[in-house]
Length: 505
Image 1: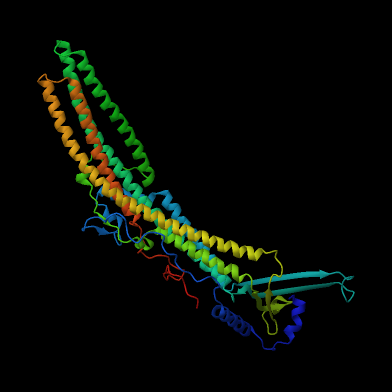
Image 2 (image 1 turned 90 degrees about the horizontal axis):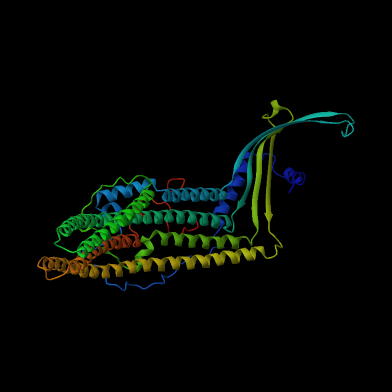
């Protein structure tokens, strides 16, 4: 409705219609919009988890602890590891990007939330114009002025069908999904730092074993070289000892190179220099992790931040269906202003200068070539995709926990066998050396026994590290390290948002 068409309607209004009256009309429309509208989104129902109700692998021993309420700094006891994780949580760039994405989603939600409320702005303007004589009704040139000051109500949609509310709900769920995704990045970062540190500890221990072996073989090589010089041994024995030495030196160089690469990876994770100690004790003596109770698979739905994020994305897709359905109904919007106008600036606020407009509009597309129908179908397809993504996330989580439980079971058996094998190899190396010293065996037998002993010692260290890494993997797979119990997501008013679906007033 244009202003000339609106003027006859204006004359029919009461003479004393004022700012108070206009405000009452706007408030009545707001209350009607907020109390009468309802979301047209489908009722949300959490899909049933597409996994078994129990774990196929037997749970750990009775003294296992639950991940729920267990923080990373109470689970990891190594002071150096806790220092590294704390540094990574402060400096890691991936986690910083995840936090910025949360801020981005929060701002997008606040923008969408503002659409539910009217936007009022104040304007002031002045204009002065001259009308030539040949265009003037009086035949004389006219110079006129106009000054206005107004409070204006920007086009505000009455959300009778819940379209704006559905979009706000979708934005809120997207924000909550981004926050949960940040927690998932946090859990993954803690696990990566722990695994990288354990790998460094493993390499340190293996390097220590090899250095002792290299020193021992260097001594043996000098002895055999001296024996060869005096003619008490053959050149073959010397070359065999030298071969054993070079093999150990080669493996030592490889492990030193792997340690440098691993330290560079850890440096990237924590965002600063690791500043690690040069020497460490045995993994079995200095690093212990309590066994974890897996609980029931259904507990993953509330413990795993990636599953929580997937469900929020599903809720957002469900809310978008409500917005697509509401698009089939008329949209009612209000535009208005109240102020004063005058041809003289000093008369702008005098009695009788009051001016106002009130322009409600109703719009309904008659023909859009099936656009709204296609948008509704698109929102439903995206909801189905979100359901599939949610179920896939649950299945991946179930597999990670099941793999960790199964791996823990078999690694324990593997370590027992390897410890027994190492004892046997130690005894074999001792007996081979005695046989050689007594002249009843060649040095090739000693060489083979020492090589096998070194391999057995290396394998024991690797398996111990694998067991610790598997415990870290189980801690992460069960949702350990996520700060889901802390103040979750705060609204602009400081109230906490529940992760449960909101009810319409």
